[in-house]
Length: 220
Image (cartoon, rainbow, N blue to C red; front, side, top):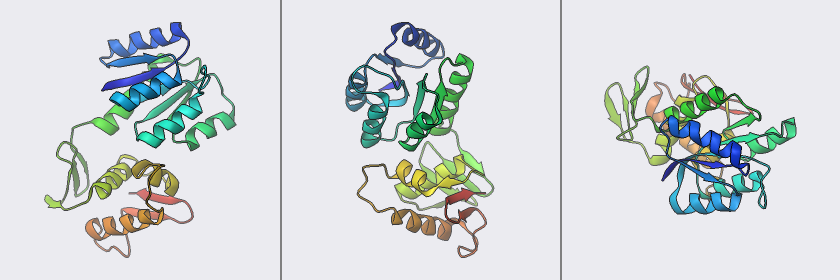
């Protein structure tokens, strides 16, 4: 599995970015077309995709939709298209970030490092009396392991990683269950209820996993 797939049809830009990524220690694959990127991702996977929109053949938004059908790897769109509508299209399709060209390489590298740290760090994550062991995929409350399902684990970790941020229900559902999930969005509400029962002192009056009515949820 490559750390990063760079989807860029401009050879000079792609190879320059590759040089920076390799220097940072990332195992990187350069795909000049969306079709090749999807083939590599389907066969080998990737931890992150850096995706241009304007590509020969299949465009970047179509590539993003296909990636989301196959998995939840983080995607950073890097594009010269800077209209608000373009950014909204990318983000609504499931991109994790949208960076305009020309970009500051240091800022792009910082965004990449941030995603790798949040998504793939093996370190424990602690917030108050809740501790997440990312290596063992276990969660502890006051030092005692709490039995959670895979989806409960992923949901709580995502909420904790975005502490203080209001996360829309659609974003949570698509991130945890995926766009191609056969589950109903109502399952998110059920899983939030289960997490509150396990981690809130008073599940009916939650202090940590808060509902933002009409929008989504926020972890405090």
